[in-house]
Amino acid sequence: MRVLYPGSFDPLTFGHLDLIKRGRRMFGEVVVAVLNNPEKTATFSLDTRLNQINEATKGIKDVHIISFEGLTVSCAAEMKCSIILRGLRALSDFEYELQIAHTNKTLGEQFETIFLATSAQHSFLSSSVVKEVAQFGGDVSHMVPSIVAKDLKHLYT
Image 1 (cartoon, helix red, strand yellow):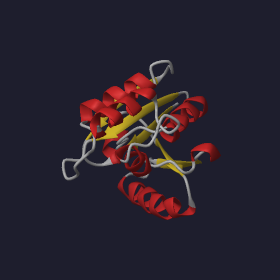
Image 2 (tube, one colour):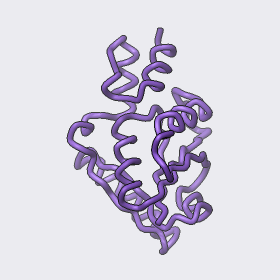
Image 3 (tube, helix red, strand yellow):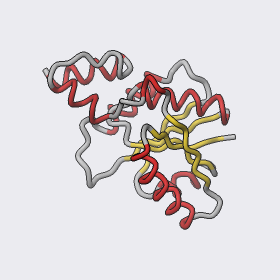
């Protein structure tokens, strides 16, 4: 079975990577769909984010990295994924994610959203926290794959 794991991944964290690995074990195949939202200014370009994810997942079989614009359900339909995987770090995430899941269901009855609780050791991680720590010269090597840490260091030095 194939599952879609959408997000901006700006940047990819160990929390994201954990969900990719767990999704792979649960569903067999994971399509990591990197959102290209022209309305938002990303820290890293789409190409850089795709490269970071490709590098960080190169040892994991049956993980495919793509980019998309527009609706997640359109991407899921195109990739033949009826399941959308989302991670939850805290109760505050659930309210937002549930609203999105219900919206997606109204756009396509065939789409189910599966929520996975983030592993405890990654529950504090967010892309925003990682960027803030990196911006002020902090060590992010325990938060992100080495390629992302290197790109952040280059960006903020």
